[in-house]
Image 1: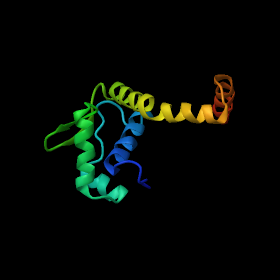
Image 2: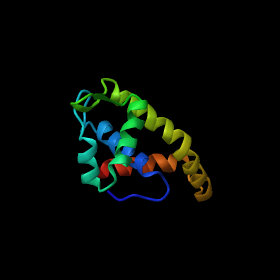
Image 3: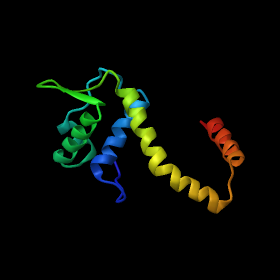
Image 4: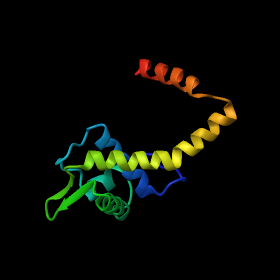
Length: 121
């Protein structure tokens, strides 16, 4: 995993977890990799991964079964979607709208670009 300097590493790892949940790679009730497994896999300090797990637990996205591991919450998909939607609306959209204005793009332009993007998928 490549990290950028614009966001804390534990939040970038949380984004990876959220993407796995939203893409349904991890479903409600699924056991997720352990702190140690994740730390080795993405080559970061286990304390950083633990911080990610604590963050996601606070958000209700994952939960811990003591001695067994961490699991995706029953409503983990919905909570993940809500969290990412809130982040998108509050952080990404303002920058996006600013760029639209600077580039003189309108909603019709975006619809056309979106259709092209979907067709390529």
